[in-house]
Image 1 (cartoon, helix red, strand yellow):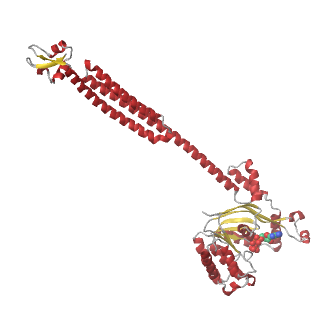
Image 2: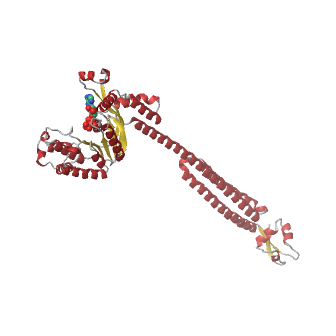
Image 3: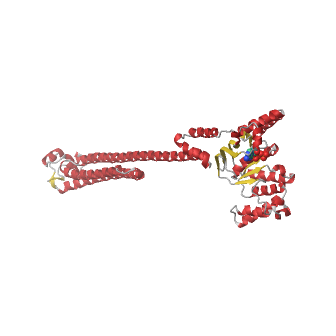
Length: 485
Ligand SMILES: Nc1ncnc2c1ncn2[C@@H]1O[C@H](COP(=O)(O)OP(=O)(O)OP(=O)(O)O)[C@@H](O)[C@H]1O
């Protein structure tokens, strides 16, 4: 959002006074050196806002306009703006030696517009100014009002962003003033700002939301136009009530004030602002130089913005650091989870496998158990390795680690299922092995499973498995059964 900010603006000039007048007046010779047209002006202009400049003759309104326009350089202080500034005044800007049309063309062509737009704009200005044939005459032949029309028309049409209007309304005829009023309102509606200096309070009230009252080069009041106007009118009434000699004394006193003004008091205000913004004595030489010599845009603002940016960068760095720590913590957590899953899978796998093997294996099948157990241990080691590898991943590989952790638990699950498969396989293999190593016998009267198991150095369970018995009643005298060799 474009904005204009003026701070600590002062303007001095060397005082021109007749020597004999100095002797007659109450001023001392030393005090006649410098005259302060402006004494510490601060204010802001918002987009689409009208600011009124109110004040008696000689109070410094035109001096302030000249500084805003860039025609004069302020003695101290800063103007921060990125707005294009147009000025409507009869005091400068118009070349009186050339015609009105040539003035229009010169200013339009300096505004960096393409030819089509430039020509369109020239026509618009010609139509708006209503100067007719006068446009083809040198401006020096214009009346003051015609010169004001020309200047105002150009200022309102050529890329207006901030338009300064310096004491012009009073010399415009009514039809043109009405036309200008409409145009100003339209421009304000699209965000164009105005500073209007006028001795006629009605004109200020018409266009300006806020008003700056200048009194002998100082800000007497700045605020809502209506409030400032009330104060201004009250002050005018007070001055009117004075006797002639009281008025002269008062004016002489004000003149002395403007000559003996100490600009250091304004610098002190600036210094307080610096310190409030966290600057120290170390920054002072730089600030002093900016205040008295450079006088560009506000250094406090620029430095504060720089500090803010640095703070922002540091904050970002800290934040990134925190994110890194949290990421590492997540990775470690996931890695631990992966190891735990692996261990858990390994434990349940071993337990399951062991139980099944215990059930299916007895005695001779012990070697099969050993093989299967070795296989499972190998698988479990694999799982643990996967977990360990996820433990070693860094913060950037958070998602990868998470994937690994979940894949390790999947692997563990698949190992567990393959373990139960392999134990079943081992069990059927061992039955086959038992069967291969058997001989046939005839069951005699009085033979029991226990007796045969003891006789052939095996177990009841093995005899039942080899022969497919479901109960001891399956053993009958006269049957042929198989027993271990
Ligand atoms: N060299 C100088 N010596 C003494 N006084 C000066 C000098 N130059 C300007 N001034 C005074 O500075 C004051 C500021 O003038 P400025 O034109 O800014 O006032 P203004 O408010 O625009 O007045 P007006 O309403 O009459 O246009 C005037 O009083 C003027 O006399």
